[in-house]
Image (cartoon, rainbow, N blue to C red; front, side):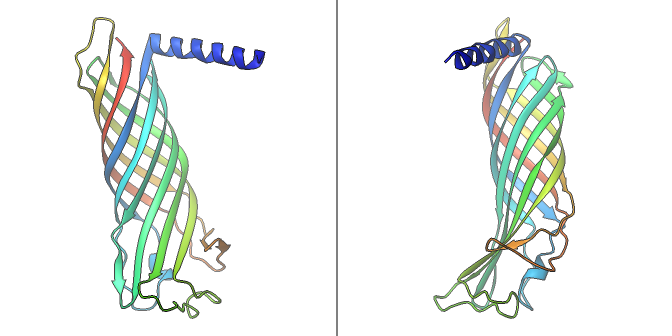
Length: 228
């Protein structure tokens, strides 16, 4: 009980110190992402069409601002349009989670402009599904699998550079500002090359290396509170 009490008091004073020098904000993301560097054709049947590299993405983020220094978290996920070949449907999706740090080049009651550096993980997924109800036989592609849907997955360590802009919609007071906010994020993300592909939870031998590279643009809606 004492430990919990001391931890609560410590978090309270930490929050008070942060807000007295800066503040914080949280956002919902909606945007688009283009991901290259994934050898999709290596996992698909012969003659399959190329899979789209363009994804619709959604997610969220938040940050604390201490004077002009920033630290925060970001998570995003997305899905590409499905391609069809005969009775097969094939598509891609992704998910990212990052710890970010940055510096506010512009930091006034209305506007925040900043770069962010991020480190985290990214999971890429390739899906092959059988549209009719008859069993899907992919024995020529991956031995001993005959499923209605197969998921190929890979997780990479990633680093990113993000350019951000946040605008506070509400009027600012003399000592503080905040309320509803709009934001914009332009991000380039690159992953460490790896061959650690799995299929339906099992390690896939002789898998090709993948080094994802993602360029994304997102519009943000959220809110925050800052000391002027």
